[in-house]
Length: 197
Image (cartoon, rainbow, N blue to C red; front, side):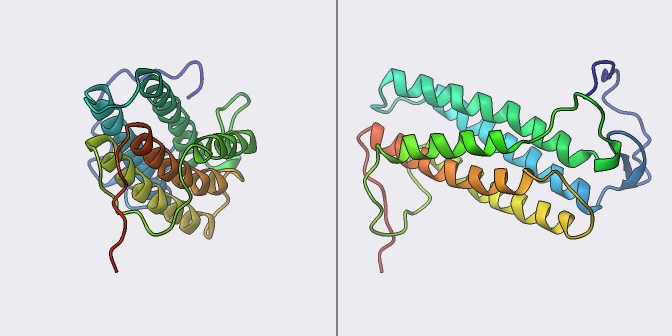
């Protein structure tokens, strides 16, 4: 949001007709693809909040320094997802100077972290079932929501322009969440549950 923007009321009644205001200007239906897109990013952020809450209460054998690192990572991601949401909530032509946007530097940082965490887990031999501790299960849920957020952003992009780094970021983020879930499992000395076929 701009420096002068301040939320003064939680409700406005202006959306009672099924429309909502976009960042910048204009109103659209609440089922518009743009609203669906950043709404799914908001849902993803809530799932990461759930993972953080579980991790705060985690009583597994996860070493404290790894738990602290994961908590910082998730907090950083939640903040960054507000940037992604702002990016998706604002039409390209309505952007302003200094507006927070998703960048390729964000994508590259995720790639660096994926590589770092992936070095500490064994190579995959089969599909990993989305289960484990409540934290790990919440991360798997977040990963699948992230994939939906990517699909929703792609659908929007097919109709109107979006920030160039949004799709690569969401694509990489789901990979990151998968690797982070594996890293937490292995770091706690737990065994991954794999597909039996």
